[in-house]
Length: 125
Image (cartoon, rainbow, N blue to C red; front, side, top):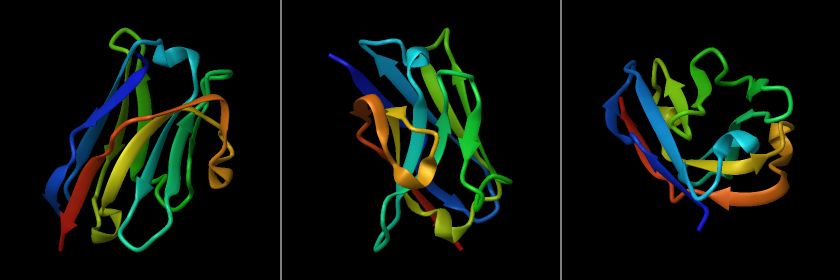
């Protein structure tokens, strides 16, 4: 069974940093583009980042690219999202997913679509 499990969310203060993890099981995460999405209360789901499996490029939306860093550890079959200088507007459920399309606004998937259950990040002001 192909599965993604996120962790690392929690209640944090404005200005702090956080690392979200996404562990894959049942398949090799590195063979597919790995994305992070977030869904904030009252807002539409937003694609935050996508690491391409074709060229290894990392795509991050402009609004957070100075604070968000997406990465992968192939040996651990794990993806990460590092968030610096957290803001209250970062409050959301964060999901990892495979196999994202790097054209982030479209939120399209390529050969398959696998989602994690999400991890909640709450940033207090």
